[in-house]
Length: 456
Image (cartoon, rainbow, N blue to C red; front, top):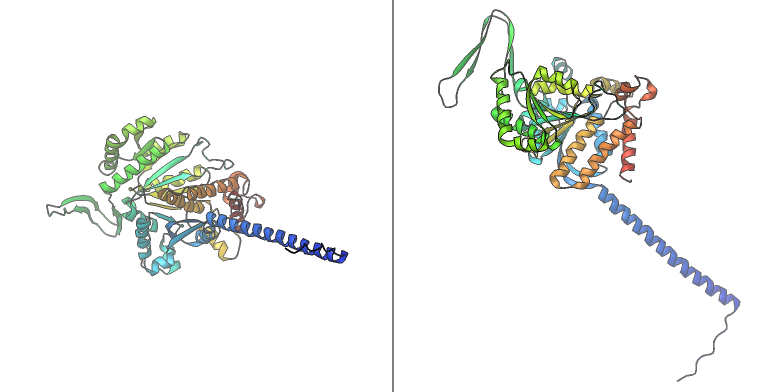
């Protein structure tokens, strides 16, 4: 065994060099650890970003017209697709493309809604004579909403979006009122006509089994005039009734159904009888447990009662009544721009969410001239959120439900913070420029507040 080597004494220069090498190693280790921490943090951020971008099942998107089409694109790109990974089944329901496809695109969008159960719809133009000329249309196409509703059936439920700082034209309405509009038949699928000479107007029903036809003489025209024939079905009225009773149970609110059965004894009487029969057989015990009630009222009596009420009930209306009264409710609660609209089908699974207002043509004309507008996008945003929330319920996706509810809350809180569009500012201050922001600034404010709420 060899003897141990004598310990070598290092010079000062060698000691300094060794110390520098040691420090280099320590620094290298620290830098390596720091880089690892940064990489881990970036990886975590990436994972969090992936989690924020929720992956969900397909949703049908129906694009629209004019100012709402422009706002719709911003909402989709800046508020939805930055947070939700969704395959959108896109249908362009803008009037030019409806005309190009002979309105087949509208039918296709409704059939896709039946397949995927959830659709979100932008506001669209229903053409009149002036629009036929403006767009050089092949014909005066029917309302796309009417076409979709007649394919899907069901009930359109509209409910106000309440902001604490927006005064109500009806101060007594301290709680929301949900209006359920029957979305099938009546005037919206009627055959109407004009006559220019004397003659008889008759209705004929020919049974499919070949038995004797029934004939009713409606009127003997002494000269020019107009006439109309319309219909509804037991199946559709039954689906309407079930949707309304189920919705009232969900809300835990009483349900009122209004008709004019004193005048239209057979037609409106059919609605009254079917509702009463379904209530007694299927829902009375559940209503009793919840201490809520169902009641039929004449439409004129119901309108008066609504104005005197404080809210917190569901109002079932026939198609035309619901069309008119939903706008009255919206304005009474503060603004047409603060109204949700969801078509609920009888199966309880399929819905179509849309903006309750029109295409805001007057603002679009200003936009075409390059001028800024102050257009309220909240109802269009809620079309997306109500559709996505339902998608979340169908798929058992609580994160998607939470995102939808967060975006809705952010919209309300943004308005309540004092940032709002011209229509809402007019309800509070009048129409002074310093009290409202333009469309883009309002949407940017919502995006900023949403990002904060989501922790971005």
